[in-house]
Image (cartoon, rainbow, N blue to C red):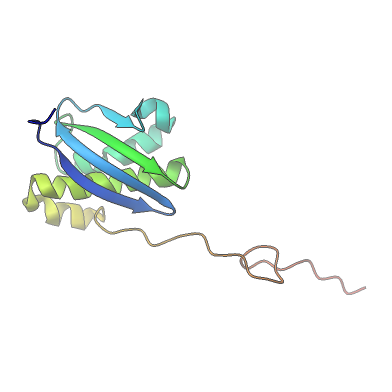
Length: 131
């Protein structure tokens, strides 16, 4: 394993952080030591994870090894996608314009807004009763 070339990228989305390594291989995805399809459970999330490979015509050329923590399944899938995109830049810096145009290199800044005091949630207040 020492002589195998690995490319690394860190991805973030919501509260999820993914450490992603891509290795030349057959297109297998392993997330937290489990098969990608079993871990994600939804076809949409699998497509989300494979999006950087589809955009750069690298489908089936790399195996993905990802370690995620924090957030939920959807946030982790977005973090893995971000990590794969950054790792592909290490493979070939020429892919930057393609990935940038698709919006895959930008960290999605949307996170859950915090709850405020005197309110039920972040913005919704308690129901007003006149009498």
